[in-house]
Image (cartoon, rainbow, N blue to C red; front, side, top):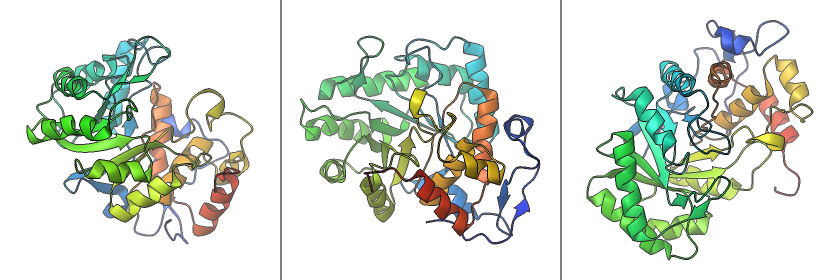
Length: 326
C-alpha cells in the first residue's frame, strides 16, 4: 500500500509557488534512494493509456456554483497550460461543469492537444439551474451528450467517458447500452462510472467494459473503500474526487484539522500530505486535485515528490481515519 522509504534525498528545486506555501526551512519533498520507479508514478488506464497518476480536475475553472465561465478566463487557461507543463497528462472535466463552459475552456487553452494528453469527461448529469444537479440516463440523451462533448472538446474520440451519475429512473443497462453503441462507433475509447457501489460496477460490466471509477474519497472520507479495493483487485483506475476534502468546511486546507501538526513536523502543507497519502494508499489511485490558482497548482503538483516512510504513512492514516466508517 505504501512505499518503503528509509533514507531520504532532496529531489531538485521546488518551484517558488510550492515553496511559498511552506515554512520552517526546506520541505521534505524527498524520495527513496534512486527515486520512485516509473510504474509507481504512472498508471496504464484501460490497458493502453499511460497517465501520470497525479492529474488535474478542471471543475473549479468555472464561475461561482460551478456555473458559467470563470471570472478570470485567461487566468484559468494559464492554469491549464501550466498543469500540462508540469507533467499533467490526465485532465478530468464534465459537460455539467458550467454547464459546457469547462469543456470549451479546455479546448481554448490546450487545442491542438499535446501528444499523450488524456481528457476524461462525464455526461448524464444535467444542470437546470445553479445549484441543481439532475441525472438524465435516457439513451437518446446520453448519445447526444457524447456527440456534443466531442464537438466542444474538438476531439474525434473521447479517451475516457464517464457516466456522471446513474439515473434511478432509467435501467442502467439502457443507459450504458447507448454508451456501448458510441464506443462501437469509435466515439469513445474507454468507459468509466462515477459514484457507484461494487454491485453497480459489476452490473455495468455486463453491458460494457469499465476501466475506472470516480467516487468521493480522501483521507477523512473513506466511504468508498470497498470500491477502491475492487478497483485495485481488477486493475481499474480509481479517481478520488474531492481528494483534499472539497470546498468550504470539508476542505483539508481549513485550520484546525487533525493533520496540521504532522504536516508542520514534516514541513509540508496539509494538502500535500493528503495527496501524498492518497498516492501511496494504492497503485490504482489517480487523484485529480483542482484549483484556479497557479500557486495552489504548484503546491499540489509538488505532492507527487513527497514520499512518506512506513511509520509516517501509518501515523497519518490513523490521524485522518474517519469515525464510524471503518
